[in-house]
Amino acid sequence: MDPRSRSFNPYTPDAGVRPPALVGRDRELEHLQSIITQLQAGGTERHLLITGLRGVGKTVMLNEFENACAEAGWPAESKEVARESAVAVLIGRSASRALRQLSVRAKVGDRLRRAMQILTSFEVTLPGGIGFKLGVDALPGHADSGDLADDLRDVLISVGEAAAEAGVGFAIVLDEMHNLGAADYEALIMALHRAKQKALPVAFVAAGLPLIPALTGEAKTYAERMFLRARLGALPVEAARSALADPARGQGVIWNEDALEIAVAYTEGYPYFLQEVGRWAWRERDGIHITRAAVDSAIPLAEAELDESFFEVRLGRLNQSERAYVHAMAALGDGPVSTAEIARSLGRKPEAVTKVRESLIQEAIVFAPGRGELEFTVPHCARFVRRRY
Ligand SMILES: Nc1ncnc2c1ncn2[C@@H]1O[C@H](COP(=O)(O)OP(=O)(O)OP(=O)(O)O)[C@@H](O)[C@H]1O
Ligand SMILES: [Mg+2]
Image (tube, rainbow, N blue to C red; front, side, top):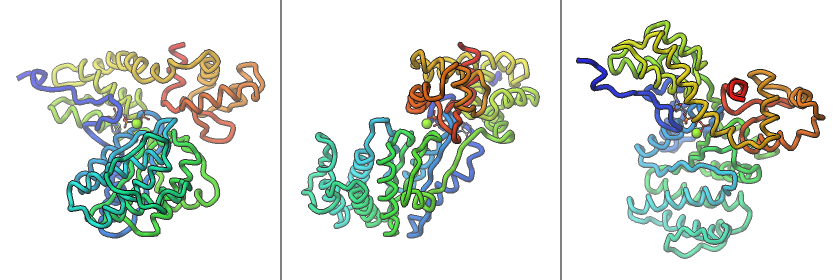
């Protein structure tokens, strides 16, 4: 039988969608599992902060963690941080959802009731209109001081105690973490640090672009000790080959050696690009073989798709001066480029283009990997700008 008649295209060029072969992330996956098993057994484990460029698989990792939490019976729901998000609201909502889930499972114990009361007190510190409707009275003097770090600590501790009472843990999962303001981030770190001293099963896993705010003072030293930082990047060659070959093999379709080589070279191992090229190569395949010719025709099709769905959606909104800045930057090469050089090639003084640079950072189009340097948050972006504009 022609395998085509009962096969499906296995590749997943889609934000946050679990790839058919989740490869090259064993270390991070092990750590995520360890967070659950350690805390569940009364031990400790470091929180995880995942960073990486667009499309490397950060959201996929958070989803894996959420699933592992669900399997362990832990309430956990990933929240996406927006630029206008307040950490108090994000944590308040995670906490209230967790308490509701705990309350339908177990009979409402003392700790759970207390946590609900504390969260109800916390409401007075939130912008108007945000209420958790937990149906209990507030517990004045808890989580209502107006000092964000202290109040968050009270919430984390009380929810952690309620979870422990039910024999599980509580996980906070935040995506697009770079959108969190510096003051909110710092308060969250302080609160996590204080909650940690109580040895409660409270886990924190977050992901974002590598432009997460720099911390100072105490918060900085706590964060260094409390977090494992995982920088996700392109997949190493062997993993990239598996990401393409394994899903096809599962359906009796074989990637020829030279085809794999070209596809991996074109994508440079970036997960999103691997999925997009895989998807088009699958369509172009010859019977049960993905040949070099198939990949040769797939690459321009994949590239056109990436231009529309991956690059243009991010860069299409730029205004004229931002666009000029991005062009100058792209013309200087692929890696990090010097901001002084960008200004020079625009024929401007560096101070004269500070504002446009800042707005591009705000919009998360670029980030500063080092002092006086800028890099695109989207892999292959310089190349895209050069070919498109
Ligand atoms: N380890 C992996 N192996 C192969 N493909 C992967 C891997 N991780 C993620 N992918 C694929 O890469 C794509 C991007 O994944 P995801 O949306 O998680 O990236 P991201 O880092 O969250 O991107 P963004 O910063 O744009 O939110 C998806 O199509 C996913 O299926
Ligand atoms: Mg994501």
